[in-house]
Image: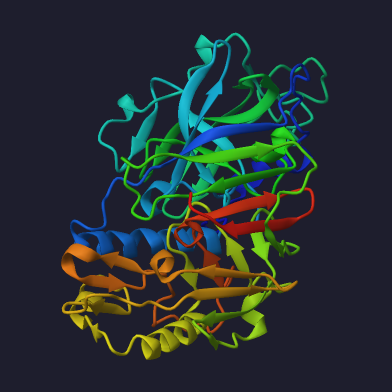
Length: 450
């Protein structure tokens, strides 16, 4: 996410004082299961060149958002999961409930939705902002605008005189800065409704205007903060199992599980969540010892695998980034070994030059293709094995394939860039049951058909 550039965004420091939303206790289910649907609209197999060009641009934007989104918690927000192959869930807010589609993003930290029929979006990728699905608070009997005297608004009431307890002004509006885009609005306290459970006074952003936004969907932040969706709901863990390699909307949906139980899920291996560096308090950093391509240990320098006090380095897992990112020194180590193990295939230098994605291969004449596994070795001894099909982008109809992981520009003079050095995207998580164990601060996973 983009770096903070203005004191305008100091308004968001009040989120450090958020309380968990209250919830009804009648007939509370132990788990809540929600359909999780791929939202990517382009099919990679049809036009490889156009898809890869789009991928290169959107992936660089996503990487910039995640790596440079530091400082105040809400000076930035990930608004691009749709561009990278995201997944959405239906959520219902208000009384009576209004259902909208929300993109799930573990790299973001707040829940918000367009909320006015006068919603405007300047230079956005969709044609008509007036047709964007919205949450309309005027149709709900349970919404309340967050007041400036509410403890959740630490800025207080700048429009009031003195310390009057009778001030009724709303908490100041928010302004979100992310990459080249922005969004603004105000916060509501509203009911979030599930079968058998209602979360009262759930904090949700009501976005009234935006710029350079590539999707019309609302956003559900699942980041490591008390104002994300799972934290506000008070769940002890959440999990998903992704089943789509090509982000084709015709595929069956996966499931997102919100779990209140204390029991341990059977058959999982675990990787610990690390303490977050100061500039990135809401990401999920994983303890990684090293990586392998096939049977070859890569010996990645430790400074890239563990976040430092200067907020450089570390491995984060992200649901909103399809293919992932590696800082340039790590990218070179990985791709150099990959090239050695795939040397029998012909490189497609033309496709690499046209798209900026590398390495790419032309598999014409090969009846079968063998791509080595990518293996993450976690502290504690667990290994996550990512099959070649889950990190290599193939275009069978054109007999082409590329390594789609994003890296820094070769002209970047920084040997060690700010932010995570490795981002494990959702493409690498396909056909894995992935559990974010919030109570025990660890990631659980197992391979299975989703």
